Length: 99
Image (cartoon, rainbow, N blue to C red; front, side, top):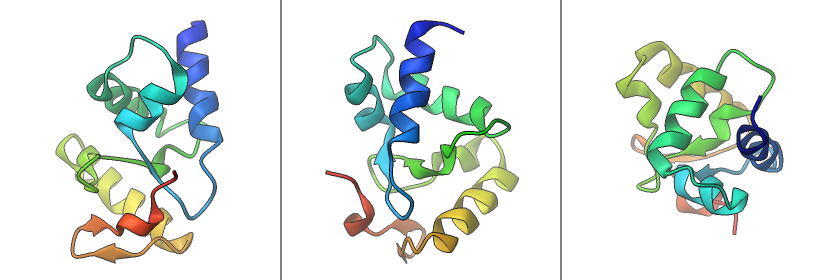
């Protein structure tokens, strides 16, 4: 695994339960060359590994993973709600974002 990818994984592991970060925030936390879109792809592929991928959402508070896989959208929402993350319609409540 590349050092840059490991930096992304480590940043995601630092997001506390019940909180979320945007793909862009994760990219900024890692100081890597990855764009928000690339972080999104990484999280899509991370859904099968031991990583809290569900805590990473779109900067517009949406769950874009649903564009790739409706099943993962439902799983992400369920996991976030289980951690106490509130939703306003289909968007994560702003209060859930890490600073």
